[in-house]
Amino acid sequence: MQKNKLQQYFPIIRGKKEILKEIGKNPHLLNLFHSWKTKYQKEFLDFCSGAKGIKILYDSYFKEVMNPEYDSTRLESFISTILGRNVKILQILPNDSTRLTDETTLLWTDVIVELEDGSIANVEVQKIGYAFSGQRSACYSSDMLLRQYKRVRGKRGDTFSYRDIKNVYLIVIYEKSPKEFHQLPEIFYHHARQVFDSGLKLNLLQEYIMIPLDIFHEKMQNKTIETELEAWLTFLSSDEPEVIIQLITQYPKFKAMYETLYQMCRNVEGVMHMFSKELQMLDRNTTIYMVDELQKELEQKDEQLSRQNLQLSQKDEQLSRQNLQLSQKDEQIVFLQKQLEQLQKNKK
Image (cartoon, rainbow, N blue to C red; front, top):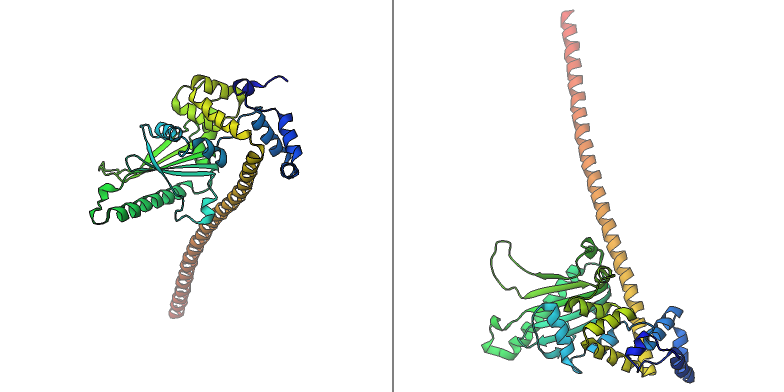
């Protein structure tokens, strides 16, 4: 059987027939496979067989290839490219933040690490950009800062100094970004830090990097990869075999990452359960997104109704003033009529 393009670069990739044959031998796997929608069955077979690339942003796959416990250099390279400086990962931090349970489900992937200089980097991947992204990001960043403060203060005790508190970086990657990002359709990298408009120089510790992959993908159509940042974002966003081949040719380090994922695909049962988990997460996230959007729509309608009520109130007030003026004029007319009647009586 003729190999597809990716199989020529990754010989460990198996064909669709071989994968289906293994699934068919196991009743449990066969039932699981048929429980998926047809489009997801095709997606699974496509990426396992190399007809398409693997969706790196799926939580299980991202953590499989980027887990610092396996190989810290990959995530270090990614964060270094995003921040524009070389970093070393000191340790992985737990995700047990003060976020509500519903809030954590909004995240496709959430990895928090402490860097060598004591600063904190949180890499989040969102399948869909939710409403109020700025407010959410500010809350999450503040949570990280507070957790760092409590941890460092507890460790230092009486020797604690605010000098010991380091920067926190919130890196948010959107597969489908919120509409606010599309007001700047040419920009796929947004970096923010808190500054004073007076020019006062103080380090307020919180920095945000937001990357809309859908805008990046649009901008890269018919364009070659030219920078390390473009290479990483291509790795995260593209499942086109031709693009993947271009990437691993120009940047060979990504070939090893794909090999990690295709080795994972050799374990059909394991990867099927991982994929099924991702589909459940996708359904949950989509539901939350719809509720979020409905809530946003209701708030907008409430705001519109409030404006209309204010306008009506102002019109009522204006009408009341006009009625008062008319009433005063009526009184003047009655008064003048009485004076006129009195004058006519006096003439007689």
